[in-house]
Image (tube, rainbow, N blue to C red; front, side, top):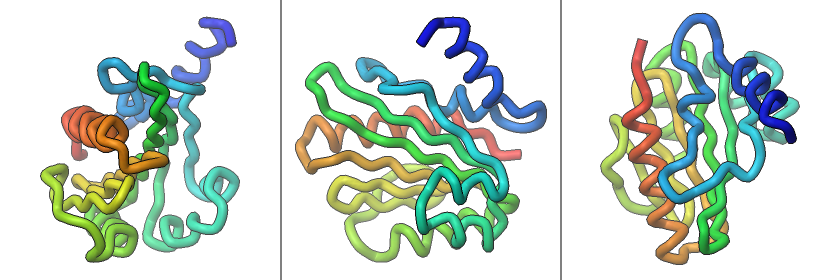
Length: 156
């Protein structure tokens, strides 16, 4: 894909009001984007995620960004950031997704790391970062990305 097309995609993901979702999806140091990030607003979420969109939409989904990254060692991680219409909705989604499995982590207002999944929320944002294995390179990549995303999140 040409740089002009990629630039247009990133520009299209910037919403005039609020946080630039594309900026949130920049990879952590040492990782590269496998394909341009995808976004969804409102009911578009049903075309991006299969089967799980109802929870978000029912609780006040506004928009989301999805990205996949690869490390120099060939490890892959995925990022999903859901902006809800209210912080209480982000907390409810987090509670349902994270449950009580895994262990508490130190990201956002609350976070849990279970196997190769990390969920956290901060303000109106619910974030899920996942890998494909529990290798230390994957888990460290998940934590690094969580730290970068948390730092980038601003609450309206």
